[in-house]
Image (cartoon, rainbow, N blue to C red; front, side, top):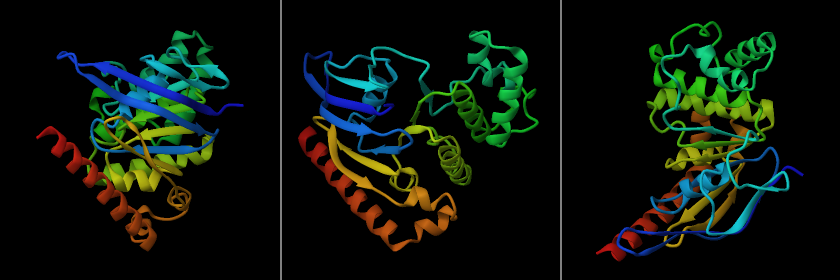
Length: 265
C-alpha cells in the first residue's frame, strides 16, 4: 500500500520569548495513491510545517506520518519537492539541472539523456536542454524544477507555493501543466497555496487549515481538477458551484484572520 497516512501528528515550537506555539495538533488523514491534495489556510495554520514534516526536513513532536508503510524520519528519494523559487542551479544548463539527481546516482548516461529529453518535452521545454538556466523566465524555470523532480520518479510530489511568484497568465498555464502531469503520471501530489482559486482548480481534495492550533478545519472533495483535464480553466472559474465554493472558503479564511487579529490586539 502506497498511501500517505498521518496519525495524531503534533508539532510544538518554543518562541524566543519562551511561548509555546502548537503549529499542528492531532492531524489525522489518509492520502491515497494518485490523489491530488491542495492545502489552504491563513498564515500560521501549519501548511508549510506539514509539508516539511512530510518531506522529512523536520521531525514531529509526537505522532507519525508514513508512506508505503514506512515512517518518514528524514528526506528520501520516494518524495520529490518543488519550491516556489525552483531552487535550481542557475549556472548549469537546463539538462544539467534536470539530470542532477540521476548523475548523483551514476545512472547510465544514455538512458539519462533519453529521460531528460522525454521530460523536457512533457513540460514544454523541448530544445532547451543546452540553455543556461539563468536565461529562462520564472515560468520556464518552474518547468525545469518540475522535470527535475519527476525524472527521479518519486511516489509523492510535494509542492510549496510552486506558482506563487508567477504572473497571472504564466500561472494559469502552469496550473494546466500540473493537472496534465497528475493525469499522465498518476503521481500523488500535495500542493500548498495561498490562492483560493488555485486550491479549488487543482485540488481533487482540499484541506482548509485553521491556526492556533494548526488543524484541518474543513475538507472538500471537488470535481474541478478532473474537469480541468478537458476544459479551459477560465470556463471552470465561471461554474456556479465553483463560485459558491470560492466565496464560502474566502469568508471562512477571512473569519479566521479576523479572529487572529483580535487575539493579537
